[in-house]
Image (tube, rainbow, N blue to C red; front, side, top):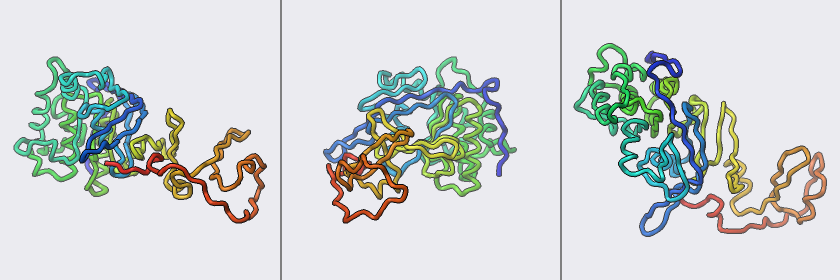
Length: 327
């Protein structure tokens, strides 16, 4: 495994991380004459200097959220703040300046971020040309060293001569060329073997210790666990959050709650559920399989076998409980 140079937190010349705030963030687009809701009210806070992984199934809205944070898409509703930038009110020119100096973006697929006819060092220098005038810039060798491309001679090679993992780390270096306060990376470890993936994750951790806020889209739970905090996007909303290996459901501002997939298999969309706050502070969710008065009866230590089960009352079409199609 490539040895990476450790960067102390907030070392001299380090980046100043940008915080992120999303409130009721909605994104709707048109497809074949229909409105498709990609994000349906995302509430999210990311502290400056934090590392976070966005998880979730394909089509859940992860990459859409990343594009909104980068100012590549405009929200349909809600608000999103990246450091000092209000991305709802910002002009196109302000968003271009933001990406040129304060927000680095890594598109999915390393080659989409690189110029094939330039060396690794020249790619970083070229990215620095778009930085706003007076913006403090690190040296290209400092950036390459940060992501572990400091081995002798590697900086002079073109992308085609680098390994897949090195090309992905070079893509990170290009996004970091202007020492941004926020790094947004879409699937930076996809199609990499385990060892190469770990090199890229180590580079991301070095970026975080450099002071930059890191947000990564990934399908790999191991990548999320290594970053420390995960947010799972389901059906266009924050469905769950993981911290230090523990998974939590998230209650939305409107009181909505995404159930874990194994629970959802037992309590399907449209099921009527009784919600009971118990004296000890715990909350009991129970499908309404018995008459309304039965909910107030004390629970036996070992539930007796019930008589013939009543049909589960259901309401709605299921779509409004998160079962609708996603892009």
